[in-house]
Length: 235
Image 1 (cartoon, rainbow, N blue to C red):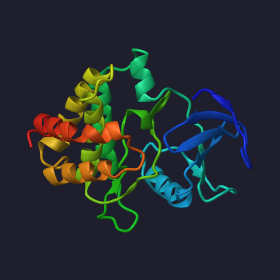
Image 2: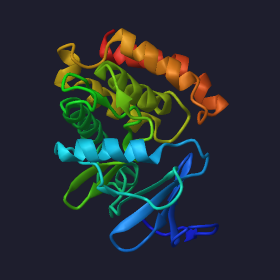
Image 3: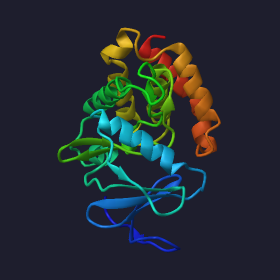
Image 4: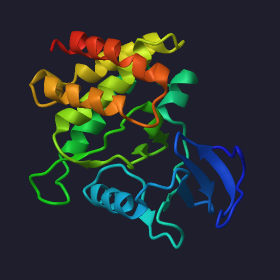
């Protein structure tokens, strides 16, 4: 991460390192950062508990520690490195490699036992190239605010729809996003029926349509995105 400004407001510990759709990340020191939800509806304690759970089972989520601040504040390990999007833009990550990495991360996550029972599956529900940081010692999956337990097919569907929305857009990265989507859906999990399903895709499309962070333009792309996913996956 690189600094993009100076933090302001009560309890902000340092420099603003980056901003997403709903949250800002501030520097605490060389080892820790604070992620603050601007919208005020996040549950940082629940998110941190789930991150600690998957990390304890060997999944590459950043370490977390208790936050003395607001309920929407999450203190977590500072992970240096580019996101997958930044690595692609710099020419150091191939779209096919990116799609295959997302598939591997989904497979490994769904192998983690759930919080409520060993038979439950943990879902990230927002796993896409902007939420994977490529650290020197391997990828780290960030932004667990949407995570829950459920059917892994919904997680596959969510990641596929996010990539497909870009692939059917007029963005310059539309073609690479399509290549990432094809590589994601070529994973053995989807080919053996353990990954994406029509039900998972339908639910992912429904959730994206009512997601308050979606722009009108993004919502209008959902129909074409769904058809692209069905075509690539053979549903």
